[in-house]
Image (cartoon, rainbow, N blue to C red; front, side, top):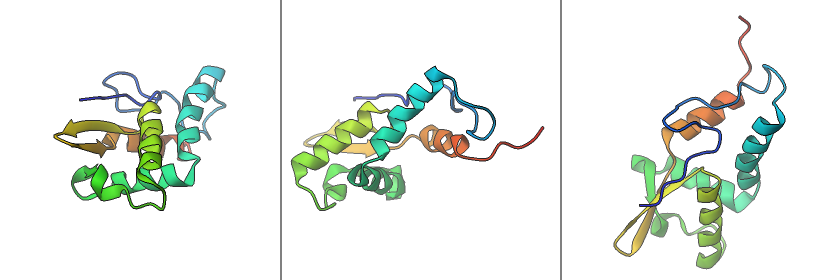
Length: 120
């Protein structure tokens, strides 16, 4: 099983490293880590694949269920690899198929990063 963690998360943590963008300016290190995620999602095919996995019933999707996005299978594999490298997806091989999932902590971190900071 191949697992990569989202760079925004500490091992075992469920909160992002960074505060909401409206709370304070990001440090250079925080911006570097955050940009990896946004860069991976900046491609329409990758964003669609990420959405297909995130919204798939049961929280995971077989590559055979998400490959119809208007590009060839090798291109789908390339984009899924980029999403894994950015820490947005995890994957597990089961027989001849690979299953992808978005960890709930990844969605929580993305949502928290983009929410407005609540005044204390």
